[in-house]
Image 1 (cartoon, one colour):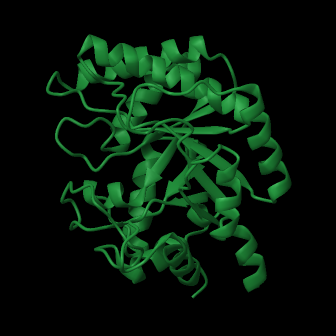
Image 2 (cartoon, helix red, strand yellow):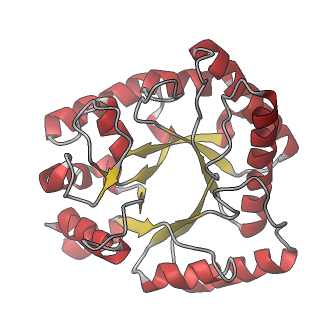
Length: 289
């Protein structure tokens, strides 16, 4: 039975592409990942080195021979798809379209994106900006890469802090719905006020999700503990089990059939207390404990 359950759980971490895109595959293997996440380009800048066919082939070949289950790409930090600032918005649309193309070249099926901040212009204005950005990026990158919308901690002016907000974005993108999915971050969920620590609380949270969004749209979990209290709106990731969600909370999360069947990426800190491998080991122990 434990062996069967082990096969069901697919976990991994974010790994570096330093020295070559294909080196991320070996790093993921070394850390004991089943799945892994990368930034395919500079996460803290607007300029990115063009992806050559050779680089893409090398990554794809390494991945196919690795035995790993899934690679996921994440958008850089600077793009803001909800920005009212024309220059930032234009660069954000360019970045999104570029990443969708890069994912296709690399053979990566999922691209995770933050939804951004309306910067005080209001929810409706932010919604229209996101819809316009995604529509434009999809038209420029006409492929089958799925864009995963990540929830936020409901910080000030942020977009996507509730299931209803994410649903509104998906529903407004009717032409591209088959290319959209959802990535739920446990730290962000908890900070936004969604209870995850008890079976009853988790069931209620998932009921709220399915009341707004089809469960088939939920395709990836970012598995992170939270430094802030429930509903604190504090977007601060913590080591698995050492934050306010806690070990018992992760036992609850990882014991839920619908969640444990999904690929999970840890985006936890690396410090003197624990590294990526340490967090991955703890998460797997809690999944089978």
